[in-house]
Length: 220
Image (cartoon, rainbow, N blue to C red; front, side, top):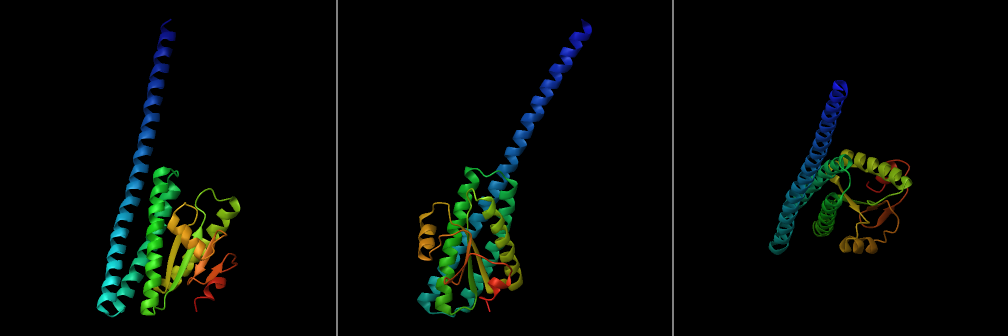
């Protein structure tokens, strides 16, 4: 009887320990996920502030008819920032399970990037800037295995181009299937019907590539 009683105590202790460890794991997972979401939110707020400041600079230059050099320089700096932040956000998303908070933050970044794209077009037209706009439209929600593979290939090529050409390229990734009216309008304007697709300087669409040269030939 004593042995049976001891076994019951051991089982009870094991059950309590399992319960504690299980709930601790859930708590730590929640805290880690919340931390990543907060980091993404901080990145967004910083980028939003910088872009709004840049837009004000552009409007000021138009009103005062000042030199374009400062505006182009600031636009290039911001483009480099959002490229680095896109890599970091992708890292956070890969580590997190995709939930409503992550999707909401992603939509906010898509809107910010779309606004940056529009601003870059205006600056390029006004200041005759020599940089290239590379807008990468991709499927964010439930891509097929074929699309995932193709998008990974496109991403790798575009990353290589950005690292190679630096400030000569404004790389702007946009999820085209997040049901955002402004991005839907841009997609319709440039006849984006197949994903993924790369839009170069608002007039060249690339849906199939074999190597980096297939893209770079439009940048020289």
